[in-house]
Image (tube, rainbow, N blue to C red; front, side):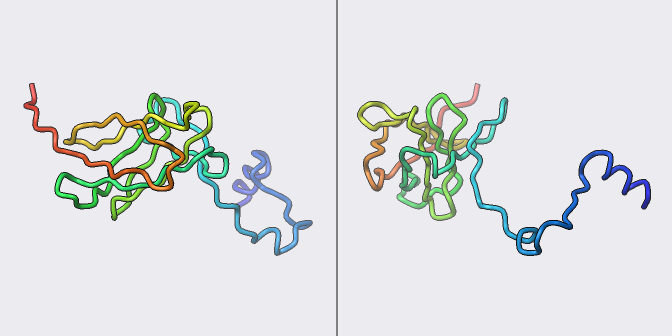
Length: 141
């Protein structure tokens, strides 16, 4: 126990909370979404909605018109993106520097086994047109 206390004290992990009120010490941390990209990461990072110039919302469906959960939408040439929920819906915050002068943003939508789509979406629209993913039936080489 003394060794653990010494390690916490010397590494700066032991904090003096005697001056903090119980309210301050137990207050929940503010909910925030990461507003950064991880170098070399293969997973999309969702930008912070509070700092976004626009938030794209819409749905992704399969070729039969059924909701497509787990489809990935990424802002072109970035690792900023999101994926659809169980009902095929998405929300994608877009930072201002990715919007064109006309308020459009280039998006990639896809999933393994389906053709990837390159889209230009109008960020001024409240609801984006439905994105339909079709199976990729090309033979493997």
